Amino acid sequence: MSDNNTKPLLSVIGGTGDLGTGLIYRWVKAGYPVIIGSRTADKAEEARAAMLARIPDADIQAMQNEDAAKAGEIVVTTVPFSHQESTLNSIKAHVQGKIVVDTTVSLVPPRVARVQLPPEGSAGQIAQEILGEDVHVVSAFQNVAADHANSDMDLDCDILVCGNKKEARAKVVELANNAGFRGLHAGMINNAAASEALTSVLININKQYDCHAGIRITGIDGDH
Image 1 (cartoon, rainbow, N blue to C red):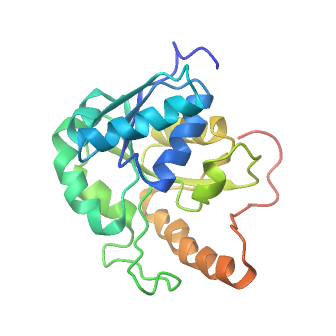
Image 2: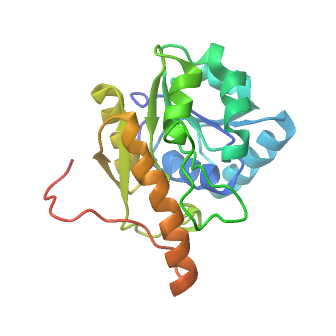
Image 3: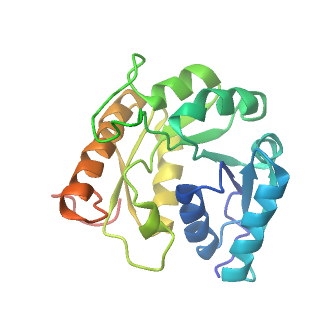
């Protein structure tokens, strides 16, 4: 594993789910110190033990969500849309002045293959409204196949990174790149509606073609 002395401490809220586990696996492999957050400490500890079984020298901790949010330098939320508001309200006081990476998609079961954006425009915009202007919300990782993230396969997938502060987006682009994706600046938080909507499109494609599709933006050369 690479030296993590210069890498920020990441807290993944809801880090015991499929997407959270996949992102944690890739960031730990890249040398990031990570805190797994969960609503219950026991569940977080179970996830930590499972990750240590895969990567014995991982720099990884387990905490309840509020404690994880307080400790992390960059906070990543990987919770379902139905839990987004309550989760963000529970950590709001602990993330002021920080970057919060919101991976939420406004999927409304059972019609998850149909685009259903919320009245606010997107889950990313909801996150920014709840957390307030002092929090740098960055929307990303909505179009990742969790099964692929939680593997050692090469990932031919772009990550659209949306947020109101370019400096915050740049840090999340770096997180995406180091996890094996290609992160791309995709504009203000309002543009998160596009990547969230694409999730339902990809679910449709996955069902139609029995695959785990991602997205790729053409015409961009070099590293970004």
